[in-house]
Amino acid sequence: MKAAGYSGTPLSKKLGIKNGFKISITNEPKGYFDLFSDLPADLKIVSDHKIKKDFIHYFTKSAAVLNKDLKQLKQEIEKNGIIWVSWPKKNCQRGNRHKWEYRK
Image 1: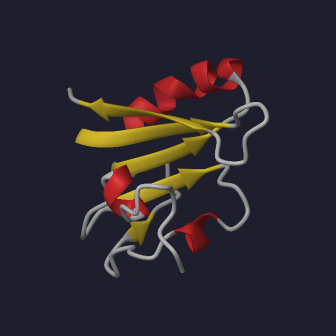
Image 2 (image 1 turned 90 degrees about the vertical axis):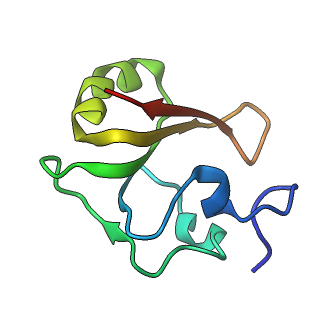
């Protein structure tokens, strides 16, 4: 599969996903994992809110829902972890993204 995006940079590299990461994906669009050509084989996908994650990709259509969930997301992220927030962009298939690197 062709790398996502127009730059040719593999998606997991763009997002900062690395070997051994514990990750969580919330509200992901259909086919999300099909967008990757380069996911590390030793990732741990974690859904337990009590376990700290290195990377969280959070999808939302509502700023109000994001604001409600943000406190919980911050509690779930490891020190120096990454939270990516993505939302749909009007008239665009790709959507918008915002990256927060969370440092305690």
